[in-house]
Image: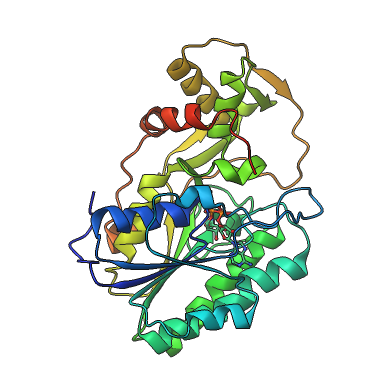
Length: 334
Ligand SMILES: NC(=O)c1ccc[n+]([C@@H]2O[C@H](COP(=O)([O-])OP(=O)(O)OC[C@H]3O[C@@H](n4cnc5c(N)ncnc54)[C@H](O)[C@@H]3O)[C@@H](O)[C@H]2O)c1
């Protein structure tokens, strides 16, 4: 549904990372509700290149965009000549989603270059175009600080979390120097929902467990998964936050979560109920250091400043996601 009374028809909208999970959902939101919106996607899509952890270097996939009829520019945010392809455009809104989104890439140089250096370029572009810039920050900026996680109290524990923390600091400084430009950072918590399939091992546990169950396997969880709680948020509510950020009268950084922590065990149980199965859960030892054991977004500022109101409970989100989980089961990932 349209979340604000802004008429985006005839507005010029850039979505970086638009071939990925959140960016492609944003693109379809605008296309569906504002058919005259001029949407440009900038994304490097995927090559076969992988990081040392075996995951792809970027997860964008053309299949996320089938049916999208806006403009597409394939380019790398690390490459100034690719970015110059955007020079001829003057945008009203920039949604900056492109990033190394894999939290387990530990090559600090590549994470910082990709996520942080490019950000300066988009801030300048927003300034030159007089555009509002809404960018993706992350709950990873909080590391394992106790819940509820609050804006202004961050302690990242991996290069990815640090890169988003650095972006937040850059955004704050830029906003002070440029009070007329709206720069809104959104710290997404654990997002799940349609069009995340191509993130493979980095997609949410909702789809990964859903596919295990559909393959006739028991859901596999870390030991004590009933005590590992996260703030899971359905993609529709993330879109709501991005759209409402467009009418913010102030720059700022806001948490985007449901505000309610739920366990990984809850996810497995809800999926089994929806899929009509009753497999015993298999438990194994959590191999990760620095694993977030409890996240819960403090969304008071997001509510008061952006009028954000998460709508989907975990039960509602998973229920509406089931058809897509079934459709993507056994699909090839390439
Ligand atoms: N999904 C989540 O739970 C979550 C949580 C917190 C923050 N975020 C952030 O939200 C944003 C979107 O995440 P997502 O889940 O859609 O991830 P995603 O990996 O599906 O989307 C990122 C997109 O950026 C593109 N990209 C990566 N490197 C690029 C480069 N060098 N040049 C151009 N394009 C590049 C990828 O191809 C991909 O399409 C990211 O910034 C991510 O860090 C996501």
